Image (cartoon, rainbow, N blue to C red; front, side, top):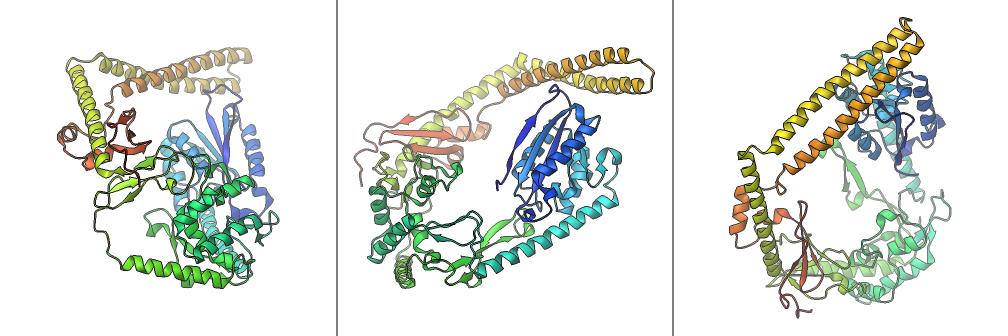
Length: 561
C-alpha cells in the first residue's frame, strides 16, 4: 500500500473561483475494517456531496489522500500539503467523510475546528457528522461533534494496543510482521508472513561470516566484495525489482561499506532466530511534541528460535561476534583521543562518490574518502585533505563573501538615504493591493445580492445573467491585477533584501579581521566538496555561493596514504 497518494487536481471552472479540498485518509489499521472507509469510496461520497452543493460545485476541487497513515497525529504528508495551501489562502473549503478521517486526536481536531479554521476563514464540512462550520460561526463545535471526536480518540488508542498485541502474537508464532524483509530472505508470496532464503544473497552472507571468522577486518571485506563487483544489499534489491527510487544513492550505484558488514555480522536472524520489538515509540509529552523511536534493552526483545530458515550456524555467529566483542573491548581500553571534534565533520564530502569524508585524528588531522579503500572505481581522490588546509580555504572564501556583503549593505544604505525609488514603488504597490482586496469583498457581496434578487423573482433571468457576467468579469480582472501586483511586490521585496542576512554588520567585520575560521564562519558553511588536490568547492547556506576555490597546485597533492 502506498503511504501517500499524490494530490490530484481537476479544474472545471476558472482559477479565480473558491477552491474546495477533499481530504481522504485510511490507516493500515483500517485495512480489515468497513470497505466504505476506502479512499475510493470516500472520494465518491465527497465528490457527490460537492456536486450537489450550489456553492461548492461552482469552484475548483483538489483531492488530498493519505493512504496508510494514522490519524492520531498530523504528521501526514498530504494533510501537511493541504494545510500549507490553507495558510497561503489558496483553499477556502475542506470536506471530509467524518471527523475521524481528519484526525483521531480530540484536542488537535478541536483546535482546528474552533480556532485555526475560523481565524483563517476556512469552511470545514464533515459529511457523516452533519457538521458545517458555516452553521456555527462564532461558536465552538456542537456537543455531538465534540463527543464523536472524543470517541474516535479513545477508539484509536484501543485499536493501536490491539494491533500491537496481534503483531506480538504473530511474531511469537514465527511470522514476519515487520516492514522490510532483511537481506538474505524473500517472501514467496505477496501476503505471506513466512520468509524463505534468497540463495543468491545467502552465498554472500556466508562468505562474509567466513572471512570474518578468519580474522579479516571489515574494511578488507568491503574492498574484496567491491573489487569483485558483488552487489550490495541495496543494489541486489534494485536488480531484482524489490527497491524504490527513494533509496537510490547519489553515485548511481550502491557499494558495500563498513556499516553494511557490521549490521550483517550482528544480525541474529541469519541463525534462524526472529528478533522483534527492538524499539518503541516514546509519547509526545516525553519528546516535546513529536514521537521518537528509542531502542529497548535486549532483555525486552522478542526472540523466537527456529522461526526463520537459518543461513549460518549459531556456532559460527557466536564465534564471529565473540571476536568482535574482544576487539571492541581492546579498542575501548586503549588510550582515548582527547582532541576536540573538528567543526568540519559532516561538511566535507567527496565530489566523485558524494560520501562524507572520514576524519583521522592524527597529530595533524586530515580527512580522506573511504570509498578509495572500498574499490568503488569512481575516481575518488586518494590523498589526505588536512584540516589546516580546509581552514585556509574557508577563511579566504568567507572573507571574500563578507566583503561583498558589506559593499552591498553600503550601497543600500546610500539608496535609503537618498529616498530610493524602490521604497516609493513598494508603498504604491502595497496601497493599490489593499484597495483591490477591499474591492474583491464588494464584488463578491454584489454577486450574492444579484443571486438573491434573481431567486426572489425581483429580476428576470436575462437581466441576472447580464449583470452576473459583468460582475464576474470585474471580479476576475481584479483578481488578475492582484496576482500581478503581488508578484511585483515580491520582486521588490527580494531586491530590497540583503543577501547574507544571517549575519549582521559587526559579525561581517569580525570575519574580515579573523585569522582562522571561527564559529561565525562555520555557521555560514553548508559543505566543502573535494574533487582532487587542487580543487575544493565551497557552498554556503545562503544563495549564490562562490562557485569554486582552487588552491595553489601542490597544497594537497603528494600526500597519498
